Image 1 (cartoon, rainbow, N blue to C red):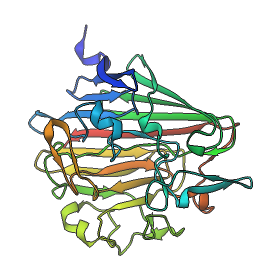
Image 2: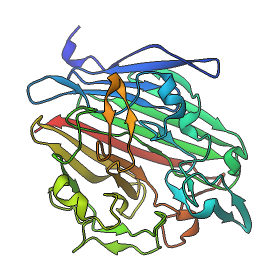
Image 3: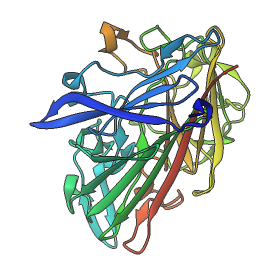
Image 4: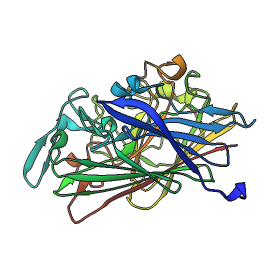
Length: 347
């Protein structure tokens, strides 16, 4: 068999249990030496091993060694987030005159789907060729959201060193939905200190300013002349302390239309030579530089403030309460679709 053309291999093994049920870890490998490991619990990406410029593999994805860590997973390492990624003001929204009250779990707001979001659920899983397919049925009223929602997420590692994540969802009643993956990256390797030596480009002219509780004001503002202007390659260490608010970046960048793939961001790590590029059909991306990070991670690594970055494809935070933002409403006649790609390589 010609090894150069053989597709990504997917193998599986046990990763412990959750509430008495077995958790499976799937390993996706391609011919470039890239290895990505994903759980059927929360759809969590546990490891991303990619070569540096010398061909040495390093794990650039933060996480835990076992289910004990992932059972709580305060930072949402690597997890699928739903039903609603990011924040909803006061945990409240209205559909057709009916108000829904969610769990308040982040200051005065609802964050990342509630007490037990998609990140804490065991998903059904199957391997279809070189694709890991995860499915979850969220019951009507789960976490107080209306409608029974059926979600499918397909993870695929390509021979071009892309991790492609394809989401689809349908609902039995009108609801709101906002899905993402919350992977934390450090291109020097997980647990290797701050990301101050990384360079970032975010290809957005606009962002959504926020109030003191990280809820968008409703404005869509120009990045021009602000610390949020990352349209040209910028060293993170040189700008992170100048971001108003004092917590670095935790902001939504706006790309406008939903449904067509956009080049959103690129992060480079000069000394290892690694880079990551992100493409998505979503209208926005949350760029988060891990101000609140304080965990003991894989291999006992100390994960500390500014020790990673996240690029979370999303609709804008609090969209259900912001009629001028792209809509997060999903009706029974519609299908929610998202494709987000992380491309890995060396410069």
